[in-house]
Length: 412
Ligand code: ADP
Ligand code: ASP
Ligand code: MG
Image (tube, rainbow, N blue to C red):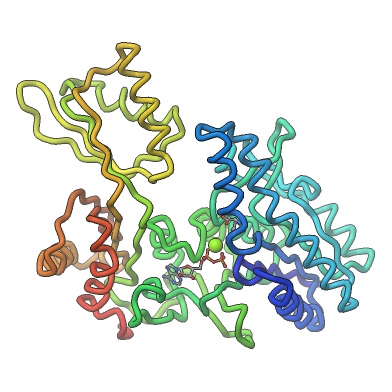
């Protein structure tokens, strides 16, 4: 029988009623003749609570134990979903990541899926089981330890299962009815897209649009998974939601496809480091070894052989970065006068494949921000995106102003 993957995010399984509603949706697909793999997230708020407990217990935690704790939310919903389906007389059972097994790298808290052997679940389908409910977000390392795939990782579990089982489609059920030109929660004029290109979705996701985890889009692109985002709160047709697909399948063509933001950014400046060959390698090598993901980087013009180095990083990695740099300084590996940390910044980005062939987008973006009195602290660009770091208090204003200026409420 054809296989369908259906993923339900945190708000879609937030309580027993919602789990029931999701299970009914699964029942509809089973009745159509699909064998269904359901991927579930933890109930909404649960993972945050678990992360909070870990941080409170151990600020510079052992990532293996972090994974042991934060993966547990999904175990609860997987079991409850299987029980709900059984109550509906749908033959179902739950699987934790290690039972499948979802084999991952050992990069704890941000592991990558390496392999999902389909045999165990296929054998159960062969015996008449109709739904495999799999706990998203988790796997097992080569060392036999539980791993997690990074926040939002259940999306990636879903796409990886769709690829491994040759599923007809991977449906991501969430609390909005598709991918929008920007987050509909902060911009009332945001427009739902019928289709979005993999590359644009990839950029939007990596720049903060959390509707899909970045890695899930990468996998869907690589393995040609038919990926759809839709609401778990509405009755659905086969055409509902947003299809993430190849560029060639899309007719409309706005130069800018969407605006993304990331609230949880911090800016760090190493003040007065020696401006000599190898210094960037020392700084960013140290940060990378400490597991810090640096994004935007600027180096000032040097004065008397010394310069300032500024970069952005996620707020929850600031402590780790400070500690690693302090140790480097103490060991004589790097000399700097001070470390300035700004926790009140946000990143706002515009994304569009059309930017490859049309100039002037950056100029327009900077003009819009300056007209609104928003000071830009750091800028980065690539072929299809422009990102700026600004004071967090201006973030929503900037998103709305850019959405207006690029007329994203209109179809191109
Ligand atoms: P889930 O718990 O189902 O995984 P998430 O909270 O991870 O849901 O992702 C859905 C949320 O993503 C939406 O509620 C919305 O606020 C946010 N979001 C950000 N950018 C976009 C966008 N461009 N289109 C749709 N949703 C977006
Ligand atoms: N529960 C995990 C998180 O909140 C994974 C997910 O929901 O995708 O990050
Ligand atoms: Mg999510």
